[in-house]
Image (cartoon, rainbow, N blue to C red; front, side):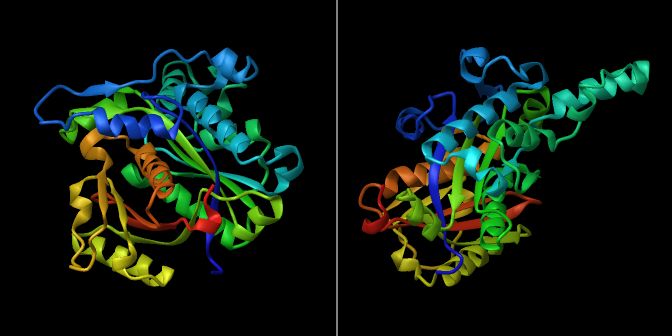
Length: 337
């Protein structure tokens, strides 16, 4: 199909490890929250930034930047793409909600207390939310599209869908798409305000390109994004509408979906009795809130199960005031990696 996009690389860092299998294992071991508890933030342990990233540029990186760059570099390596040869055709799209607010606050405090002239000129360019994607672009030598998506819990999955549009629209040949969220006072305050008692930090990336591009490179994709739909979330019926729209775009029926990966159980309000997947996983109900990174982890978890006996996966994520996102992933025998 004309608008299909292949996933040819993955990279991640999480509190449970740096492999998809580590997150899947956590799904089996983590108990569901019973509410009414202080916020418990699952954090990434020791991260030797010098060893993993080198010293160059570290002073300008906060925790979100370090994790994002590390996961993006993993992803690029996994895809076997030589960025030095493909730099003009490689893009970056990053989703984050709170990823750079701590750095922005520090800079605003200096401006407020001491005046703008007191800012270090080398720091002045690091005051915007879009700077994380820019840092990744520099470190991966990506010179095509560079964009940041800030859309609440949907940010990471929205970034992947935006990246698909960049590829099918001819704006980039390859795109690193991902999400990041790290521990910060802003993240914790948001969790308290929304009565979430468990959360985690992390970063995750997928590399996207057209299936025929991957074939010419001799790369077998993990899976293919057959179709997706994004609608403003203004009520429960938007869930059904976005799923139906994705299914229609993919030219498959609800009965052909055998794997469903949702955010939480509120994302399973699909009014179709024929929609009976063999397996349903609700990542937020098990692992807690991951904000921008949760949608990327949903995609990565789907890739793991598509290696088994599942053929078509539907990933859905929604949030009040955000979008209702539905993605159809397919893994056929000819494209199993």
